[in-house]
Length: 222
Image (cartoon, rainbow, N blue to C red):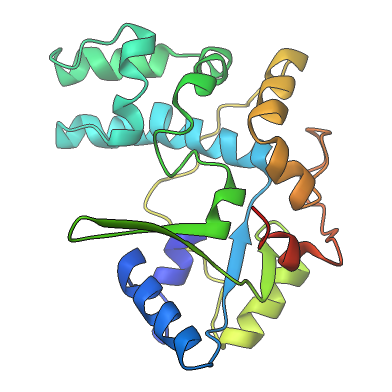
């Protein structure tokens, strides 16, 4: 979804700091900046990360001879020597099972934004010139990316085309098999996401469009 949005001609990518400065200035003068929070089912999110960083993404980085921070954080827990050759690291990542990846998540999920609980977006971190603060964000709408109705509403509001999907990585055909242990681990790590965004704890039910009537306001609480 991120890639699809970045290809829209009438949307402009911005940095966290620039967004937060604009947001705070608007609030200061009594004007609201309309904000939408895009969320994804935590089960689907966990699968997508695994396929990108341990399968397709691993092959891409093998060609580039470099590894992303979101991959490095797993190295110490998986016995991967960062000084090893790209081929050796790639072989290790490719050999990592989904079960091993999920078992490691409790140690690393707070170390990379791709794994952070989505509920953390209620407060965004502003860092500049030694200043660090958490800015609470008022969201007008929570959009579930697996919900066609939500995406249609977003497309209409922003006047964008989301029918054409763009993605830098190819789909990975490897099936993911969920055990009860893995389901419980993801449910525990992302408990607040499941509860706040009304996602089912049934791993087979991914396209739930149910929303809480107070969902957006719940995002403002700490």
